[in-house]
Length: 360
Image (cartoon, rainbow, N blue to C red):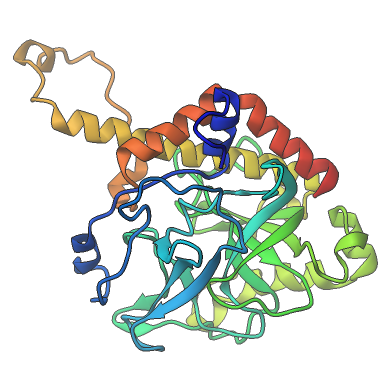
């Protein structure tokens, strides 16, 4: 990240793209929702904010707990600082060149489920530090009964599909999770690994009345990456790939006794420009999630409203943010800075998106 003597413009960009510190107490990891872990350094540590923007090269997954148990968690460890980071909140969405501190055009993909596997891993959005865990139902670990998935599956950091945002083209709200990504490259990416990817398109699945967008992307270093620039290139050069993805999502719940999933937008894979608009919206939604967390915390600290205010039946009700679902978001002060940088430095966000459109 930029040194403290740099201009506010550079500081704003570094905050936008990832320089943040979140203070989390060790006791938080001993909550009923998280496994009992040995003492470990948490993000930010005792030395102040991170001194650089995180990238895929900085992080490696670290397994805590015994594999294939309810307690198993994959935490993201910062190799340089020997501390743990949140794959959802600490990792920037846009990859930044370590020398120039400018966006490269790639976005950072967090792999949850490697291709050719079936264990249903996902980021634990309700747990401190947001590790990756295997989903469970009634105390049983879940796997896809349909069988192995055909692509690397995960999400983009610093995105959120807001249930309160009704997309005008779809007519339903988001699914309350980070934005899903299907990486179609040749190699298998391990659980908890982060890779720079190029966005190619997007499919919108409607899952139980919620929009569940699926970004189609490819690892920037994949053998096909230089030949794939938009969704039409995938259909032309890798025929059948998109149909396979759509049919996998359509049918994967059927073995569980559920109906086939449906899709919006005429079941069409939308192009790269449309996909980047979805990325943009979910990135901004993540910022709104941050801001709402700050506002709710501030409101909770205030005294009860005055009696005369309570009597005003015509007063507009306060918006009920989706934080009632108990999502785990970072410390207020750190994320207030990130949110402010996104609002005040709109050009930085626009420049990063434009770079993805041209050079991703």
